Length: 85
Image (cartoon, rainbow, N blue to C red; front, side, top):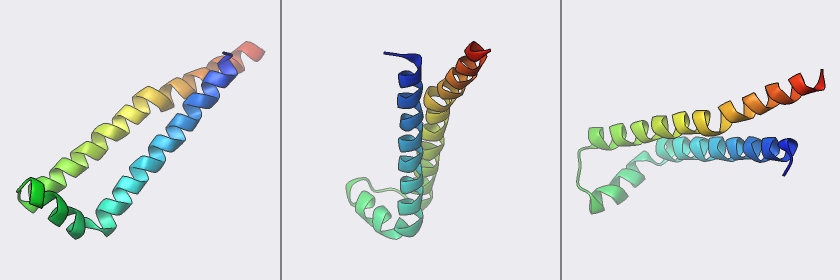
């Protein structure tokens, strides 16, 4: 497996992960009440706690995407450009 292939795979992983994050946010924003009713049937909780759980989950997911895909991708791009000199 070449560095270019690894860089390409990590780049696509970052794009897909950000698409998941955007979809999560849009569904949470546009179908908030429906999601809350669905989840509160299984796990009774106040709406404020529900919101905190989702926002915290999105924050943790975003940090994970940044650290595990975006940063390695940028590092590989920098190293591949440095190798061309």
